[in-house]
Amino acid sequence: MVTDTLIDELKRFIKEYYRFVSLPDIFPTALGGGFAEIGKGVMPDRELDQVSRLLSGFVKEKRRPDFAHTLNSLREERGLEAAELYKAAWVDKRVYSKLMASGGRPSKDTVLQFAFALKLGGADLAVLLQSAGFALSDSSMRDLVFRFCAERGIFDLHDVNALLLAAGQKLLCKEPAEDQ
Image 1 (cartoon, rainbow, N blue to C red):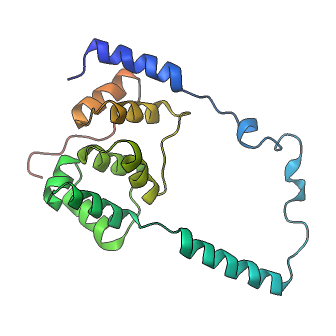
Image 2 (tube, helix red, strand yellow):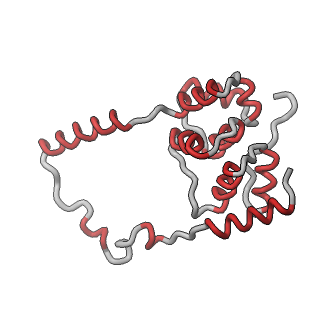
Image 3 (tube, rainbow, N blue to C red):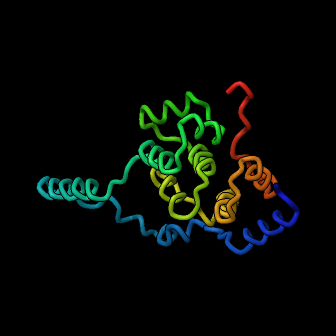
């Protein structure tokens, strides 16, 4: 249950960890004309082939399991049936089936819904987010609320949504209809 004390704790957490990031922080040379060198010179075909082989090897070595595989592994580790997971995550059965069958890319919110349903924190949360191409950012108030919840073991989606509202952020998801 979300209390005033918990909301105050969330406010202190955001104040401590929120980082405003500006364009010059991300691209320090952008304002100084550092992009002028991009595109100069053309790589010879043999060098391009070598780079292509190196890149291919790098991808094979570094590639991680996709979202569907990662989600399925985490679900099995926790002893949940598929229906238990998508219902706990407030995700429609059709959406879940499509993600698992096609290896499609979910939205960040959908990934977080599954993460909270699986009660993930720390490294497991990061792995699930990364498997879909996402991460939590200290420059996003909304992401800080998610991090706050995960670090404090607040996994109930009603509570997560209440804390998002208390921080003036968009809800993670709507509660599903009773017939789902």
